[in-house]
Image (cartoon, rainbow, N blue to C red; front, side):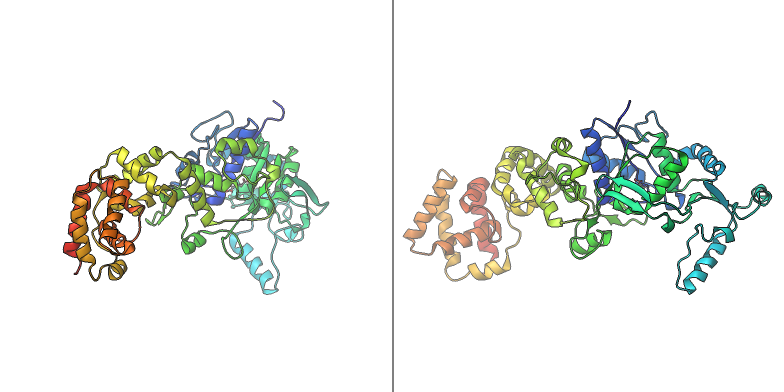
Length: 505
Ligand code: GLU
């Protein structure tokens, strides 16, 4: 039973999980699997004002999409439940009582208005009000009031909170796997609220009690929780519990400039910051990696390298390889800059690793949406022509639409440049020559057309570019003779005829 690794991902359902949240989950997951531990999903929903319907489901779906299986959680159950903090309300009572009896916590009756007044008063002197050991005796709490007064207030039903009592003293020392030995001055801490007037514990209280009761061995979480660490350590001490091991992950930074990656950066620079689409209650949709066409493997691989590195040049890792190579010691302290270009690069790599058949199968539904039904073997041929050029399956359409349907319009710039002089006449003549070409395959076509151009004593570029314009509608696309073979003689001739009819002489 000793040294069991039990690790939790403990999101608050206050909205969709963003990139940083998924990375925290991932590092917890990798660490758990590497150490044959248990991966727990705990929902920290004691702040009912910030609860967002649908967020819980979103979190679970995101983990599932990324391939992180939860061992214990609100859906999976487990021996340490319930796993939703709002359902653990009764559990916290006795621990609050314990701290009150030990004199480590106290009742405070100050109303929100009184506290606001204090804040303003301090602010007007250019100071910040902190509810701590220097002011608590002048406030309305069980340390300042007599026992009778306190009891009378509680009996009367006066609203109260319970605050943690932090006294000045020795620095709080703690070791963090990523940050090393840390030391915090307790003087900088205030007497945090542990228990709110709504009868629910605050994050700090519930988090510590649950980590203890759920026998969490390692707490792996974002850097934004580092300032709470001394308070958490003091809470463990107050309870007389052994704290878990801590690892605070580096921030994920904006692609440009300073600071933490935010949703606004995504809007501004055109990339998703959420794993899945998220629809706000107002009906606004934030884009997700899944819906943008990212493979979950590519997304996970990209995330893993935001702050962690294997110590080698290797960049492509399957989940299993990540599990094998992962260690908390190889996580950087410094923030990890997010690079949307690199995210695309990862998807490109994963697309190239698939077989042509796999890519073709993924492309079929895209074609279906365009109203096109095609043989898998034909789609495979098409895909093999252009697959290296795309980062996403959905980009295949732009690269290949002309394999499936005749151009509906012609690129104006190309028309201006290529459709002039004797070109229409040349195309008419060439069309006749093509009608007699057999077999209609790429090498034969190439030979015949080139020979025809030489005989006709005209320019190679002139003819081939104009022909491409008629077949593709633009100047792009793979090898022209491959296109002709693939669309076939009948379609080739039809497109030439069409162009001759539509384009101005
Ligand atoms: N509920 C906290 C959050 O939303 C958990 C922080 C922690 O892991 O302790 O991130």
